[in-house]
Image (tube, rainbow, N blue to C red; front, side, top):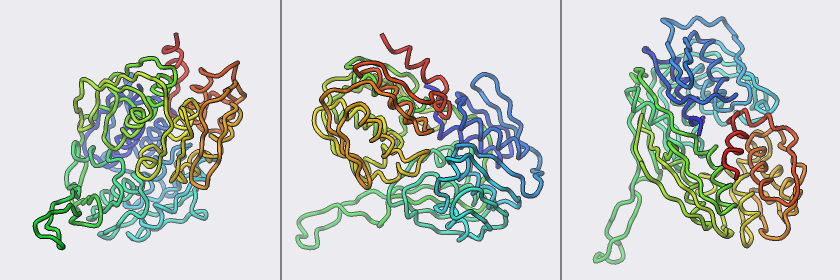
Length: 431
Protein backbone atom coordinates (compact mmCIF):
# COMPACT_ATOMS: atom_id res chain seq x y z
CA UNK A 1 0.00 0.00 0.00
CA UNK A 2 1.06 3.60 -0.54
CA UNK A 3 1.97 5.46 2.66
CA UNK A 4 -0.73 6.52 5.11
CA UNK A 5 -2.28 9.80 3.99
CA UNK A 6 -3.09 11.05 7.51
CA UNK A 7 0.51 10.61 8.68
CA UNK A 8 1.96 12.12 5.50
CA UNK A 9 -0.04 15.35 5.91
CA UNK A 10 1.17 15.73 9.47
CA UNK A 11 4.85 15.22 8.78
CA UNK A 12 4.70 17.74 5.93
CA UNK A 13 2.91 20.44 7.92
CA UNK A 14 4.96 19.94 11.09
CA UNK A 15 8.08 20.58 9.00
CA UNK A 16 7.09 24.27 8.97
CA UNK A 17 7.68 24.37 12.74
CA UNK A 18 10.84 22.30 12.96
CA UNK A 19 14.34 23.67 13.40
CA UNK A 20 16.00 20.70 11.69
CA UNK A 21 15.34 18.63 8.55
CA UNK A 22 12.65 15.95 8.63
CA UNK A 23 12.86 12.87 6.39
CA UNK A 24 9.62 11.08 5.46
CA UNK A 25 9.98 7.53 4.13
CA UNK A 26 7.15 6.05 2.01
CA UNK A 27 5.51 9.45 1.45
CA UNK A 28 2.45 8.78 -0.81
CA UNK A 29 2.14 10.44 -4.20
CA UNK A 30 -1.54 11.37 -4.21
CA UNK A 31 -3.26 14.69 -4.95
CA UNK A 32 -4.13 15.43 -1.31
CA UNK A 33 -0.57 14.91 -0.09
CA UNK A 34 0.85 16.92 -3.00
CA UNK A 35 -1.31 19.81 -1.79
CA UNK A 36 0.45 19.69 1.58
CA UNK A 37 3.84 19.64 -0.17
CA UNK A 38 2.93 22.75 -2.17
CA UNK A 39 1.62 24.46 0.96
CA UNK A 40 4.85 23.98 2.94
CA UNK A 41 6.90 25.18 -0.04
CA UNK A 42 5.04 28.51 0.21
CA UNK A 43 6.28 28.79 3.80
CA UNK A 44 9.83 28.44 2.52
CA UNK A 45 10.35 24.79 3.44
CA UNK A 46 12.74 23.01 1.08
CA UNK A 47 11.12 19.85 -0.32
CA UNK A 48 13.44 17.30 -1.93
CA UNK A 49 11.81 14.17 -3.36
CA UNK A 50 13.81 11.03 -4.09
CA UNK A 51 11.34 8.34 -5.09
CA UNK A 52 8.94 7.97 -2.17
CA UNK A 53 11.39 9.54 0.31
CA UNK A 54 10.86 13.24 0.96
CA UNK A 55 13.27 15.50 2.86
CA UNK A 56 11.84 18.68 4.38
CA UNK A 57 14.35 21.42 5.20
CA UNK A 58 12.95 24.36 7.18
CA UNK A 59 13.89 27.95 6.30
CA UNK A 60 15.93 30.08 8.68
CA UNK A 61 12.85 32.30 8.95
CA UNK A 62 9.41 32.37 7.33
CA UNK A 63 8.92 35.33 5.00
CA UNK A 64 5.38 35.13 3.69
CA UNK A 65 3.70 38.16 2.02
CA UNK A 66 0.54 39.38 3.76
CA UNK A 67 -2.68 37.60 2.72
CA UNK A 68 -0.84 34.90 0.80
CA UNK A 69 -3.42 32.55 -0.72
CA UNK A 70 -2.82 28.84 -0.15
CA UNK A 71 -4.92 26.47 -2.23
CA UNK A 72 -5.79 23.38 -0.17
CA UNK A 73 -7.40 21.64 -3.15
CA UNK A 74 -9.64 18.83 -1.91
CA UNK A 75 -7.74 18.24 1.34
CA UNK A 76 -9.67 19.04 4.53
CA UNK A 77 -6.71 17.81 6.60
CA UNK A 78 -4.40 20.36 4.97
CA UNK A 79 -6.91 23.19 5.48
CA UNK A 80 -7.81 22.42 9.10
CA UNK A 81 -4.30 21.72 10.36
CA UNK A 82 -2.79 24.64 8.48
CA UNK A 83 -5.47 26.96 9.87
CA UNK A 84 -4.27 26.15 13.37
CA UNK A 85 -0.61 26.57 12.53
CA UNK A 86 -1.18 29.99 10.89
CA UNK A 87 -3.51 31.14 13.71
CA UNK A 88 -0.67 30.70 16.19
CA UNK A 89 1.93 32.46 14.05
CA UNK A 90 2.35 36.11 13.11
CA UNK A 91 1.44 35.42 9.49
CA UNK A 92 -1.51 36.54 7.38
CA UNK A 93 -2.89 33.81 5.11
CA UNK A 94 -6.04 33.05 3.12
CA UNK A 95 -6.91 29.36 2.81
CA UNK A 96 -8.97 28.36 -0.21
CA UNK A 97 -10.07 25.06 -1.71
CA UNK A 98 -11.95 23.46 -4.55
CA UNK A 99 -15.74 23.39 -4.74
CA UNK A 100 -15.98 20.22 -2.66
CA UNK A 101 -13.69 21.45 0.12
CA UNK A 102 -15.40 24.85 0.15
CA UNK A 103 -18.62 23.08 1.13
CA UNK A 104 -17.13 21.21 4.08
CA UNK A 105 -17.57 22.50 7.65
CA UNK A 106 -14.75 24.57 9.17
CA UNK A 107 -16.65 25.99 12.15
CA UNK A 108 -15.41 23.07 14.28
CA UNK A 109 -11.89 24.54 14.15
CA UNK A 110 -12.82 28.21 13.82
CA UNK A 111 -14.69 28.39 17.13
CA UNK A 112 -11.96 26.94 19.42
CA UNK A 113 -9.21 28.85 17.60
CA UNK A 114 -11.11 32.08 18.24
CA UNK A 115 -11.43 31.08 21.89
CA UNK A 116 -7.62 30.85 21.95
CA UNK A 117 -7.51 34.47 20.72
CA UNK A 118 -7.03 33.88 16.98
CA UNK A 119 -8.42 36.21 14.31
CA UNK A 120 -10.27 34.29 11.59
CA UNK A 121 -12.67 35.57 8.94
CA UNK A 122 -14.78 32.87 7.30
CA UNK A 123 -17.59 32.48 4.79
CA UNK A 124 -20.42 31.24 6.95
CA UNK A 125 -18.23 28.54 8.51
CA UNK A 126 -16.59 27.53 5.22
CA UNK A 127 -13.57 28.34 3.07
CA UNK A 128 -12.17 30.71 1.98
CA UNK A 129 -10.78 31.45 5.42
CA UNK A 130 -8.65 34.50 6.18
CA UNK A 131 -6.38 34.09 9.18
CA UNK A 132 -4.36 36.79 10.90
CA UNK A 133 -1.93 34.97 13.14
CA UNK A 134 -1.13 36.33 16.58
CA UNK A 135 0.08 35.32 20.03
CA UNK A 136 -2.51 32.94 21.48
CA UNK A 137 -3.59 32.35 25.06
CA UNK A 138 -3.03 29.21 27.15
CA UNK A 139 -6.07 27.05 26.48
CA UNK A 140 -8.04 24.18 27.94
CA UNK A 141 -10.61 22.51 25.67
CA UNK A 142 -12.87 19.50 25.76
CA UNK A 143 -13.55 18.26 22.23
CA UNK A 144 -17.32 18.39 21.60
CA UNK A 145 -16.99 16.13 18.55
CA UNK A 146 -14.62 13.23 17.94
CA UNK A 147 -12.20 14.76 15.44
CA UNK A 148 -8.48 14.14 15.09
CA UNK A 149 -8.29 17.10 12.70
CA UNK A 150 -9.69 19.52 15.28
CA UNK A 151 -7.36 18.12 17.92
CA UNK A 152 -4.33 18.43 15.63
CA UNK A 153 -5.29 21.93 14.48
CA UNK A 154 -5.30 23.18 18.08
CA UNK A 155 -2.02 21.40 18.83
CA UNK A 156 -0.31 23.07 15.85
CA UNK A 157 -1.76 26.43 16.92
CA UNK A 158 -0.32 26.06 20.42
CA UNK A 159 3.09 24.96 19.14
CA UNK A 160 3.29 27.84 16.65
CA UNK A 161 2.34 30.36 19.34
CA UNK A 162 4.39 28.77 22.15
CA UNK A 163 1.40 28.65 24.48
CA UNK A 164 0.34 25.78 26.73
CA UNK A 165 -2.61 23.60 25.74
CA UNK A 166 -4.74 20.97 27.48
CA UNK A 167 -7.15 18.89 25.39
CA UNK A 168 -9.61 16.29 26.65
CA UNK A 169 -11.38 13.67 24.56
CA UNK A 170 -14.58 11.81 25.40
CA UNK A 171 -14.00 9.54 22.40
CA UNK A 172 -10.43 8.58 21.55
CA UNK A 173 -9.56 9.61 17.98
CA UNK A 174 -6.61 8.99 15.67
CA UNK A 175 -3.41 9.76 17.52
CA UNK A 176 -0.92 10.19 14.67
CA UNK A 177 -0.05 13.76 15.73
CA UNK A 178 0.68 12.68 19.31
CA UNK A 179 2.82 9.76 18.11
CA UNK A 180 4.77 11.93 15.70
CA UNK A 181 5.47 14.57 18.35
CA UNK A 182 6.60 11.88 20.77
CA UNK A 183 9.13 10.77 18.14
CA UNK A 184 10.42 14.03 16.64
CA UNK A 185 9.23 16.63 19.15
CA UNK A 186 9.28 17.55 22.81
CA UNK A 187 6.93 19.06 25.39
CA UNK A 188 4.04 16.62 24.90
CA UNK A 189 2.39 14.50 27.59
CA UNK A 190 -0.54 12.13 27.08
CA UNK A 191 -2.70 10.51 29.73
CA UNK A 192 -5.24 7.84 28.84
CA UNK A 193 -7.85 7.31 31.53
CA UNK A 194 -8.23 3.64 32.43
CA UNK A 195 -10.99 2.03 34.53
CA UNK A 196 -10.04 1.22 38.11
CA UNK A 197 -11.45 -1.18 40.70
CA UNK A 198 -13.22 0.53 43.61
CA UNK A 199 -15.28 -0.81 46.55
CA UNK A 200 -18.97 -1.20 45.83
CA UNK A 201 -20.73 1.40 48.04
CA UNK A 202 -23.68 -1.00 48.45
CA UNK A 203 -21.57 -4.02 49.38
CA UNK A 204 -18.01 -3.44 50.74
CA UNK A 205 -17.18 -7.10 50.07
CA UNK A 206 -17.46 -6.48 46.33
CA UNK A 207 -15.64 -4.25 43.89
CA UNK A 208 -16.72 -2.55 40.70
CA UNK A 209 -14.99 -0.81 37.83
CA UNK A 210 -15.26 2.94 37.51
CA UNK A 211 -13.60 5.73 35.57
CA UNK A 212 -11.52 8.09 37.74
CA UNK A 213 -12.26 10.92 35.27
CA UNK A 214 -15.30 11.65 33.08
CA UNK A 215 -13.17 11.78 29.89
CA UNK A 216 -11.07 9.18 28.07
CA UNK A 217 -7.84 10.99 27.22
CA UNK A 218 -5.91 14.13 28.18
CA UNK A 219 -3.25 15.71 25.97
CA UNK A 220 -0.97 18.46 27.26
CA UNK A 221 1.50 20.63 25.37
CA UNK A 222 3.91 22.73 27.39
CA UNK A 223 4.66 26.28 26.27
CA UNK A 224 8.15 25.17 25.22
CA UNK A 225 6.85 22.39 22.91
CA UNK A 226 8.77 22.07 19.67
CA UNK A 227 9.56 19.82 16.71
CA UNK A 228 13.19 18.70 16.67
CA UNK A 229 13.38 17.00 13.30
CA UNK A 230 14.32 13.43 12.44
CA UNK A 231 12.93 10.54 10.39
CA UNK A 232 9.31 9.41 10.02
CA UNK A 233 8.75 5.99 8.42
CA UNK A 234 5.17 5.96 7.12
CA UNK A 235 3.34 2.59 7.08
CA UNK A 236 0.89 1.53 4.39
CA UNK A 237 -2.50 3.26 4.43
CA UNK A 238 -5.12 1.03 6.03
CA UNK A 239 -8.01 3.16 4.73
CA UNK A 240 -6.86 2.49 1.16
CA UNK A 241 -6.14 -1.15 1.96
CA UNK A 242 -9.77 -1.57 3.08
CA UNK A 243 -10.95 -1.69 -0.53
CA UNK A 244 -8.62 -4.55 -1.41
CA UNK A 245 -9.39 -6.43 1.79
CA UNK A 246 -13.09 -6.04 0.94
CA UNK A 247 -12.46 -7.63 -2.47
CA UNK A 248 -10.96 -10.64 -0.71
CA UNK A 249 -13.89 -10.72 1.73
CA UNK A 250 -16.54 -10.82 -1.00
CA UNK A 251 -14.66 -13.20 -3.32
CA UNK A 252 -13.75 -15.73 -0.63
CA UNK A 253 -10.13 -15.46 -1.76
CA UNK A 254 -6.99 -14.71 0.23
CA UNK A 255 -5.01 -11.49 0.08
CA UNK A 256 -1.81 -10.49 1.90
CA UNK A 257 -0.71 -6.89 2.43
CA UNK A 258 2.75 -6.09 3.79
CA UNK A 259 3.84 -3.13 5.96
CA UNK A 260 0.26 -2.12 6.67
CA UNK A 261 -0.38 0.50 9.35
CA UNK A 262 -1.98 -1.08 12.44
CA UNK A 263 -2.41 1.92 14.71
CA UNK A 264 -5.10 0.78 17.22
CA UNK A 265 -7.20 3.86 16.41
CA UNK A 266 -7.38 2.71 12.77
CA UNK A 267 -8.02 -1.05 12.94
CA UNK A 268 -11.81 -1.08 13.38
CA UNK A 269 -12.17 -2.24 9.75
CA UNK A 270 -10.09 -5.33 10.51
CA UNK A 271 -12.33 -6.12 13.49
CA UNK A 272 -15.35 -5.60 11.27
CA UNK A 273 -14.01 -8.13 8.76
CA UNK A 274 -13.73 -10.70 11.54
CA UNK A 275 -17.24 -9.92 12.77
CA UNK A 276 -18.83 -10.50 9.36
CA UNK A 277 -17.15 -13.85 8.75
CA UNK A 278 -13.61 -13.30 7.40
CA UNK A 279 -10.40 -14.80 8.73
CA UNK A 280 -7.69 -12.24 9.45
CA UNK A 281 -4.12 -13.15 10.36
CA UNK A 282 -1.49 -10.61 11.43
CA UNK A 283 2.23 -11.37 11.44
CA UNK A 284 5.59 -9.54 11.53
CA UNK A 285 4.08 -6.92 13.82
CA UNK A 286 6.53 -4.17 14.72
CA UNK A 287 6.74 -0.43 15.37
CA UNK A 288 8.74 2.15 13.42
CA UNK A 289 8.58 5.88 14.15
CA UNK A 290 6.12 4.97 16.90
CA UNK A 291 3.55 3.59 14.42
CA UNK A 292 2.61 -0.09 14.59
CA UNK A 293 2.60 -2.00 11.32
CA UNK A 294 2.59 -5.60 10.11
CA UNK A 295 1.63 -8.15 7.48
CA UNK A 296 -2.13 -8.70 7.22
CA UNK A 297 -3.70 -11.69 5.47
CA UNK A 298 -7.45 -11.64 4.84
CA UNK A 299 -9.42 -14.70 3.72
CA UNK A 300 -13.04 -14.16 2.75
CA UNK A 301 -15.98 -16.45 3.37
CA UNK A 302 -19.78 -16.39 3.58
CA UNK A 303 -20.50 -12.89 4.89
CA UNK A 304 -23.15 -12.09 7.48
CA UNK A 305 -24.97 -8.89 8.33
CA UNK A 306 -23.95 -6.82 11.31
CA UNK A 307 -25.42 -3.82 13.10
CA UNK A 308 -22.91 -0.95 13.25
CA UNK A 309 -23.26 2.04 15.57
CA UNK A 310 -21.52 4.23 18.15
CA UNK A 311 -17.75 4.01 18.44
CA UNK A 312 -17.65 1.26 15.81
CA UNK A 313 -19.14 3.65 13.26
CA UNK A 314 -16.68 6.34 14.36
CA UNK A 315 -13.81 3.92 13.73
CA UNK A 316 -15.19 3.09 10.27
CA UNK A 317 -16.16 6.60 9.20
CA UNK A 318 -13.79 6.70 6.20
CA UNK A 319 -14.74 3.15 5.20
CA UNK A 320 -18.56 3.45 5.27
CA UNK A 321 -18.96 3.15 1.44
CA UNK A 322 -16.96 -0.09 1.20
CA UNK A 323 -18.59 -1.46 4.38
CA UNK A 324 -21.94 -0.87 2.66
CA UNK A 325 -20.74 -2.65 -0.49
CA UNK A 326 -19.75 -5.71 1.56
CA UNK A 327 -23.17 -5.60 3.23
CA UNK A 328 -24.80 -5.98 -0.20
CA UNK A 329 -23.10 -9.40 -0.50
CA UNK A 330 -23.81 -10.50 3.08
CA UNK A 331 -26.66 -12.62 4.36
CA UNK A 332 -29.26 -10.56 6.20
CA UNK A 333 -29.82 -6.84 6.70
CA UNK A 334 -26.99 -4.56 7.79
CA UNK A 335 -27.91 -1.44 9.75
CA UNK A 336 -25.42 1.44 9.94
CA UNK A 337 -26.20 4.23 12.43
CA UNK A 338 -24.38 7.27 13.89
CA UNK A 339 -22.73 7.97 10.52
CA UNK A 340 -23.98 11.54 9.98
CA UNK A 341 -20.35 12.68 9.61
CA UNK A 342 -20.33 10.81 6.27
CA UNK A 343 -22.76 13.41 4.91
CA UNK A 344 -20.13 16.19 5.07
CA UNK A 345 -17.22 14.45 3.35
CA UNK A 346 -16.27 15.06 -0.31
CA UNK A 347 -19.95 14.40 -0.99
CA UNK A 348 -22.91 13.13 1.01
CA UNK A 349 -21.53 9.61 1.15
CA UNK A 350 -24.68 8.13 2.63
CA UNK A 351 -26.86 9.40 -0.22
CA UNK A 352 -24.23 8.53 -2.84
CA UNK A 353 -23.77 5.01 -1.49
CA UNK A 354 -27.52 4.40 -1.33
CA UNK A 355 -28.01 5.63 -4.91
CA UNK A 356 -25.33 3.33 -6.29
CA UNK A 357 -26.47 0.31 -4.28
CA UNK A 358 -29.96 0.74 -5.70
CA UNK A 359 -28.51 0.81 -9.21
CA UNK A 360 -27.06 -2.64 -8.47
CA UNK A 361 -30.52 -3.87 -7.55
CA UNK A 362 -29.84 -3.86 -3.79
CA UNK A 363 -32.61 -2.79 -1.42
CA UNK A 364 -31.18 0.09 0.58
CA UNK A 365 -32.88 2.49 2.95
CA UNK A 366 -31.35 5.91 3.56
CA UNK A 367 -31.61 6.78 7.25
CA UNK A 368 -31.07 10.17 8.89
CA UNK A 369 -27.67 9.06 10.15
CA UNK A 370 -26.97 5.86 8.26
CA UNK A 371 -28.13 3.09 5.95
CA UNK A 372 -30.17 -0.11 6.02
CA UNK A 373 -28.90 -2.59 3.44
CA UNK A 374 -30.58 -5.87 2.57
CA UNK A 375 -28.05 -8.43 1.36
CA UNK A 376 -28.67 -11.25 -1.11
CA UNK A 377 -30.74 -11.28 -4.29
CA UNK A 378 -29.66 -10.39 -7.80
CA UNK A 379 -26.91 -7.84 -8.14
CA UNK A 380 -26.53 -6.39 -11.60
CA UNK A 381 -23.88 -4.33 -13.34
CA UNK A 382 -24.64 -0.62 -13.40
CA UNK A 383 -23.48 2.80 -14.52
CA UNK A 384 -22.15 4.17 -11.25
CA UNK A 385 -21.69 7.82 -10.26
CA UNK A 386 -18.77 8.73 -8.02
CA UNK A 387 -20.15 12.19 -7.09
CA UNK A 388 -16.59 13.55 -7.21
CA UNK A 389 -15.60 11.34 -4.26
CA UNK A 390 -12.57 9.03 -4.40
CA UNK A 391 -13.92 6.59 -1.84
CA UNK A 392 -17.25 6.21 -3.66
CA UNK A 393 -15.38 5.50 -6.91
CA UNK A 394 -13.15 2.91 -5.22
CA UNK A 395 -16.00 1.20 -3.36
CA UNK A 396 -18.17 0.67 -6.44
CA UNK A 397 -15.22 -0.31 -8.61
CA UNK A 398 -14.72 -3.17 -6.15
CA UNK A 399 -18.46 -3.93 -6.21
CA UNK A 400 -18.36 -4.12 -10.02
CA UNK A 401 -16.02 -7.14 -9.84
CA UNK A 402 -18.84 -9.26 -8.43
CA UNK A 403 -21.88 -8.06 -10.40
CA UNK A 404 -23.72 -9.74 -13.26
CA UNK A 405 -22.81 -7.84 -16.42
CA UNK A 406 -20.51 -4.89 -17.09
CA UNK A 407 -20.36 -1.71 -15.05
CA UNK A 408 -19.01 1.78 -15.61
CA UNK A 409 -17.85 4.57 -13.32
CA UNK A 410 -18.40 8.14 -14.52
CA UNK A 411 -15.01 9.54 -13.41
CA UNK A 412 -12.17 7.17 -12.55
CA UNK A 413 -9.71 10.06 -12.19
CA UNK A 414 -11.01 10.99 -8.70
CA UNK A 415 -9.13 8.05 -7.15
CA UNK A 416 -5.95 10.14 -7.57
CA UNK A 417 -7.02 12.13 -4.49
CA UNK A 418 -5.83 9.27 -2.28
CA UNK A 419 -4.45 6.49 -4.51
CA UNK A 420 -3.54 7.21 -8.17
CA UNK A 421 -2.34 3.59 -8.56
CA UNK A 422 -5.69 2.17 -7.38
CA UNK A 423 -6.75 0.53 -10.65
CA UNK A 424 -3.30 -0.98 -11.27
CA UNK A 425 -3.33 -2.45 -7.77
CA UNK A 426 -6.87 -3.72 -8.24
CA UNK A 427 -5.95 -5.38 -11.54
CA UNK A 428 -2.95 -7.04 -9.88
CA UNK A 429 -5.15 -9.00 -7.44
CA UNK A 430 -7.68 -10.24 -10.01
CA UNK A 431 -7.19 -13.77 -11.36
